[in-house]
Image (tube, rainbow, N blue to C red; front, side, top):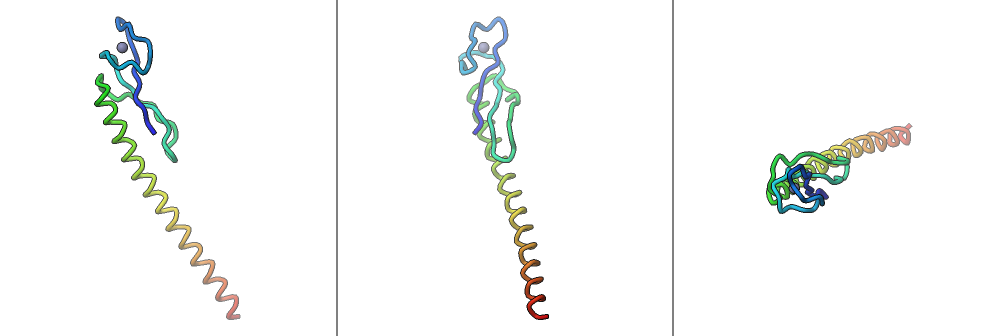
Length: 93
Ligand SMILES: [Zn+2]
């Protein structure tokens, strides 16, 4: 889950990271399963745009995570198949 926060710079009078009624740069941070900790500039000063970007990042990372999980599963299945063949050949002897 990624969330958007604001990095305030002078002359902005806001101090809270959740304040988004100003034109300070918005950042994205959060933790994504299998991808670790994320912290990067949203490259926008608009909260809504930063939120959109955060959701897009979540989606694209979820796809990558699913793809690597599939590959790991595929690899695991192949080695299991090989093991069962090995067992069969032992039984035949
Ligand atoms: Zn600000």
